[in-house]
Length: 240
Image 1 (cartoon, helix red, strand yellow):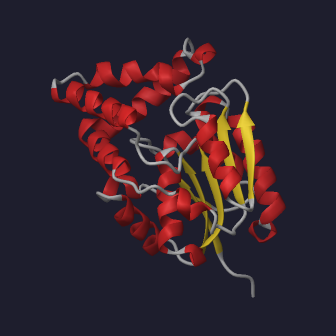
Image 2: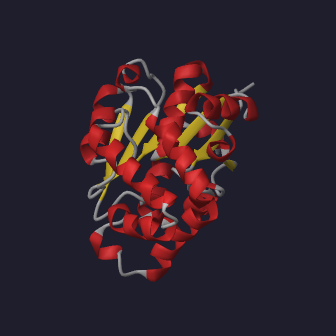
């Protein structure tokens, strides 16, 4: 009897299932898809990973974007035998740098001043490729996710993400099929950070999405869907 495998999509910081809407529609034709929200219900990365493991039985194929990729790596840390596959989109294995810590502190200061809308709007140019910034539907979809999350959740999830360990030492031990994807103009988690992950994981393949920023599942859904489907077809025939 084949081992049960579950595909779990993990959203990024303060993001919800809407960031995976296009992927769910495409992947649902291939297999059963689950979008987790553990990052909204637990206070730390270890607690998020533990909850995800408890809520999904059997072997897991994890697909995490940004903070979701960091949660996925924490699942690998806790239970590597449970992870059958790993897709890491626009994420990093590095800990916060002083510059990133300063950006988080500046965001918290604006929130404390009641300027949440100003803060999230100001983050838009860092989230998308420059040529997509004048597309109101795309930008609204991103901002609406952050509005649904609200300032308290954004702060809590930032604190959890900032407390992550340096995951680079973990990468060489990963043996499951791994896909690393990044927008070629990602200004948040850079191509360099994705290349570092792909170089360190023996089984990894790297795919760069052209003319794309950080929010690649929203910004270039067709390209992301095609890459995920190729990867699933090549490595997980039992999911068909």
